[in-house]
Image (cartoon, rainbow, N blue to C red; front, side, top):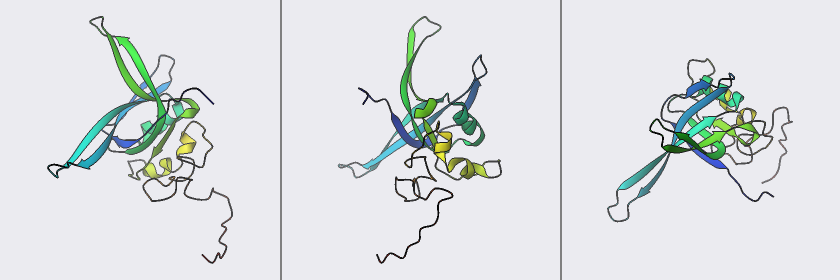
Amino acid sequence: MAGSVNKVILVGNLGRDPEIRFTQAGKKIANFSIATSEQWRDRQSGERRERTEWHRIVVFNEGLADVVERFVKKGSKLYIEGQLRTRKWQGQDGKDNYTTEVVLEGFNSNLTMLDNRGGGDGGGMGGGSSSGGGYGGGQDSGGFGGGSDAGWGNGGSSGGGSAPAGSPDLDDEIPF
């Protein structure tokens, strides 16, 4: 087993449409921010409180960047698996600047769309989101993003939620 783990899992909503850029070599990169919120009730005042965190996401995986470009819009709800990376650059004033981002690159990344809002693309996001594992850098798991909607938002289990396509329907009459 590895001596350390760098894995980030987020479920949140986009604050604005993604930015699509290209490297000098022509590789597509998608950038966007998602918001995660936590709510609680203040014990002293009884008021409902909320704290929102914004997370910068960078998608280097070309397949995922294509999906982001075609289907992801402001307000989209996403399940993200990636890695934390801190990037350093020098500003115009010569000072070092740092930013920490969640990076989706290679086989360790996953992006699953959790809503079925249809954009202007006919089938909408439902067709592109139902199998996040297909967009997630080649994962072969029955867990998050490896089956249908993997149970997110529809009360299913975290084990995939449905039988794989092409498997026989095993409807045995079990008495319980």
